[in-house]
Image (cartoon, rainbow, N blue to C red; front, top):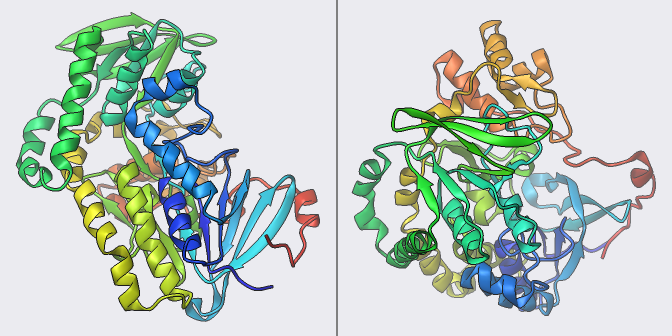
Length: 468
């Protein structure tokens, strides 16, 4: 069967923008996405959201509606509900097409492509607190989903820091809710970030800063309580969360709660790039791993590109431009355009991408997670699937485990259904701290396919000539 010019994994801002740029030039492009509708996490359900939700969630969310409509009309082959569980890079250094295996409707299928764009976005940074496994404790992204369904209880406590946390609190307030925000940003974070502010005001930085100031003003006007300098958070409850104990201003306090949202920023979703053997680097400012990529999104593996938050956190608007930049390179690799035409095609996107990222170093430093969050107490569960505590990870390191893969062999940490997605970042930091080395040196889990659960029946139903 003939190969697609490109296969894009993920239908968020980067994936949709890349698909539009390719399909609208006549290229053969397929988009694979697990969700039932395009938009990714940031624009989830935007095409079907009621007017009240569009208004409450703001202009940035509504912007996604135009992108979704353009994507659906672009001519790109779109496979919703498709879970990619293996990508095999093209042989001969990428000269041969790559194989992309995915499951859809209970059947395993395969397509091939001259290049593959990974646009799977980000995941929320794991926040291993005592009690974080209790029902009623979830990430800010999950609470946003509930918000669209008006299923948020009155006693909501948000724990963490970052722009998304402030946005979520403002969205709750616009629907008549008054969450209490426990801000875990370290004391002195603003002073540490200020030297980066002047450069951050270039491009669109000043506009992003103004939006942040407006968010804070909205929260004050709505009477949302923000408690700063919070440490030592413990989530309490028996069968479900019932309250939060924390320390602020030298005093320990307690809040009753029916729902707790945790958020300490987002990090690139790295399972797929890891499984392909793409080189990764530890970003000290963002405190996360990210894949190494050139200005066009090309990774260290020939034929594999990355765009959007999957390649480094930049936000939805930056992701759109990164998607179009990667699309230009994919079109060049497919022989649809030459390098000169690629430069003309992406010239504006390169400028806008940089403009949207101008403030990012300041924000990363301002909202860097507090050091105590990366050092959970010994009795705190880190690997939720296998119920492995931080203390057992530290003990494995003292017993000779040099990194996450050895810890996996010692303890089964990272071998559950999530395949280390949740515990991986924390285990890397725990091992690095125990061995007094850098997180880069400690490394990360070795990821192998299948990346998502697949049944024997689904594999048996696969045909070697499955295609669009």
